[in-house]
Image (cartoon, rainbow, N blue to C red; front, side):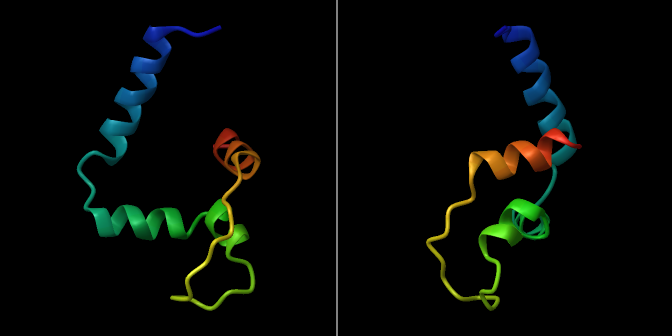
Length: 65
């Protein structure tokens, strides 16, 4: 069930954990995680891609944290 209190708490947790990070640090963090790596499987670093990072891959990865 949707609750504004739960959403606010989630946002607060994210901001407290990552709010002081620089953009480059956030980029490095996300690019080291499974959803990003899986979507880029087999592609060399720096090569542009149109591969989708799926909602399912994010739900599995982030749901397990």
